[in-house]
Image 1: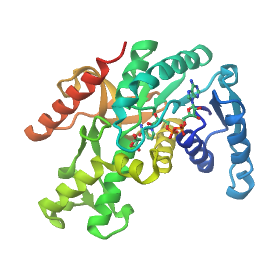
Image 2 (image 1 turned 180 degrees about the horizontal axis):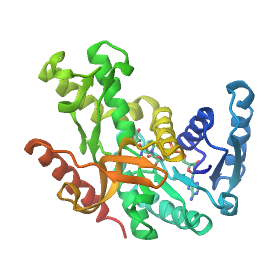
Image 3 (image 1 turned 90 degrees about the vertical axis):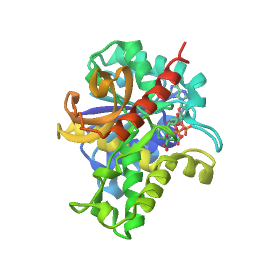
Length: 307
Ligand SMILES: NC(=O)c1ccc[n+]([C@@H]2O[C@H](COP(=O)([O-])OP(=O)(O)OC[C@H]3O[C@@H](n4cnc5c(N)ncnc54)[C@H](O)[C@@H]3O)[C@@H](O)[C@H]2O)c1
Ligand SMILES: O=C(O)C[C@H](O)C(=O)O
């Protein structure tokens, strides 16, 4: 299993690290435009192999896509991150050109690759990859919901004063400060609805904190987060590599599901060796449906800014 990670920055390096440490891929190639940067990150990571006990071979390359040839999975993290006070949508002007050219270079050398788009604004960048490449829709996956759901679980565990491993919950909708939809109705501690333990007001606070999870960290760090994003990507890569058929909310191109068309947005997906193997359609309440429609309208507005 060969995995390419484009962008050797904070998220790309964290993603390569988690993939290697989980030890399921034979090879990870990191690629960046900054001279020697990916090579340096790859060497540094390789020097952790004997310490961390993994056998994955990590190499780096400065923009030479021939090194990525025949990748099974490629992750696009190239582009600029936001600074405190910015929205993800403000990154479109610079990141759209980067994501389009990177996606085209990847497909030239790996015609069967499954692409995971991370660069922001992620739902629009995933849509752009679909429109630019025209490959089967199961092979382009936007990563946002897996991260947002991890943050939802973190906030639920905080409110419940329990370990995150005791809770489960999912966030669907657009990967934006206002568009995320934490599905509080379905969230559980062990198998019990969290509404047994938390008041409506506390659950609303959990949802609100989840939605601004990225902005909160950007304010604290001066740039956006990387550990949880990298870990979330590594879980999607692992589910595809191991053909696990696990469910994650992913930004998927919709063709009528949830009443939406011509948009990539976060919905529950089953991941396996073919990428998105199934989009799961939930029975949403009228209020949840309205939130999803509103979230989709905002993503479409951003898509409209693509040249
Ligand atoms: N979808 C998500 O959940 C999620 C989570 C975190 C970050 N992000 C996004 O991921 C992106 C990367 O964030 P980061 O913190 O790693 O930024 P970063 O600045 O640390 O790294 C980005 C890297 O991309 C490289 N790059 C730029 N243009 C390139 C090109 N054409 N080809 C190859 N490499 C190129 C840069 O040289 C840099 O090393 C941002 O757009 C950020 O908003 C998304
Ligand atoms: O918040 C950001 O801009 C980066 C990323 O989308 C995140 O949620 O951490």
